[in-house]
Length: 141
Image 1 (cartoon, rainbow, N blue to C red):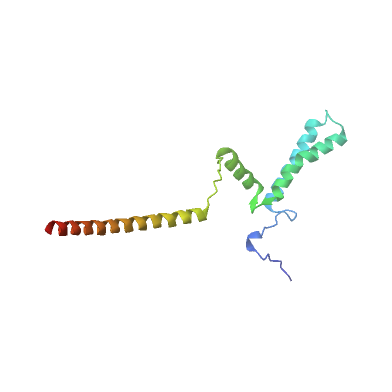
Image 2: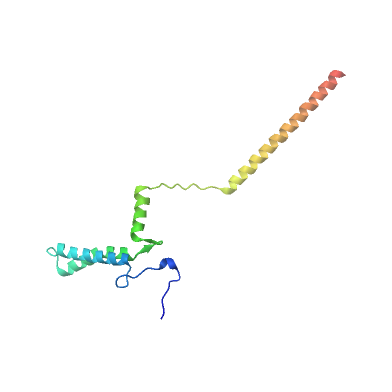
């Protein structure tokens, strides 16, 4: 006796009716109901061939919803996520490029400026001290 086991446990779906999962079965029943409803509503207005195409086209979206998965989401989760992201909470994304090398160079230049200012201040302190010493020497002479 062999039992098939999926390699990925998250991909497992239990077959309930006719090899379909419960979700797939519900959407298939909805598709059939929509096709029957369209048939009885539109029978007085169209011929049989046109009516059969209308029934098929009306049922296809509901049948697809039961079987489609996109990025690991079922169709209804995807639709709700799309509505939420595009209609309820749209974001305006602005792309502003950044030049990493320019930022690094600016940081280096700022550090050099700070160092040069410190050096300049230290030089000024020594110059002032030397001037004061020279003036004191001149005064004493």
